[in-house]
Length: 236
View 1 (tube, helix red, strand yellow):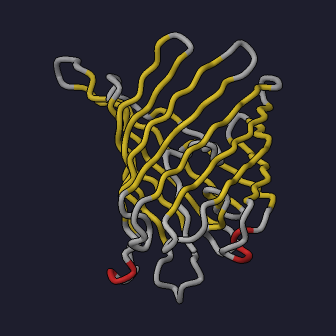
View 2 (spheres, rainbow, N blue to C red):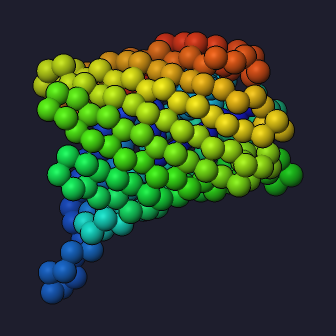
């Protein structure tokens, strides 16, 4: 059973680094690029393993207009234990994000694609959503709602809601936790709740995230088991 990510809200953080800006000859800014690469002991999204409980390689490239609009592409190795129908996930992301004081917001879409998978499996789908956040003096909170009318595998509507908190412990350590609910059609599986909690340590060149994930249902067998995951990510 496949569960996917959206905007990486509450998922493992990936380091990004700004690359040189592009500009017109007259100096008008075109935007900036950032990128990231990561290796994780298990690609987890919405509490469910995407890599058959194995290691996954990941990476992404994003463009920021500097005026709120953004586009990006992100990829990961996957293993759904489906006879090697899909071995990679490529996502195209776009939207508009901004902030006002301590308040931030983000609205957009993500198009999930699985090159190599047979069209009859109907793996590809589009999800839209919105998230908000607020930064306090010693912590920040976030929440989001995400919707698709044709979920993975052609299983109709699905709604994912999530809330999270992040607490910097010092200049290098950050603790974070998330709790979420996934409402799906019976053809996809059972509605379920999922949560995660973890610590991220930021070195000069890499981030290391150690996190525990769990769900309250077992409809997808071992893929639903609670587990610890280690992810190492760095800027390009």
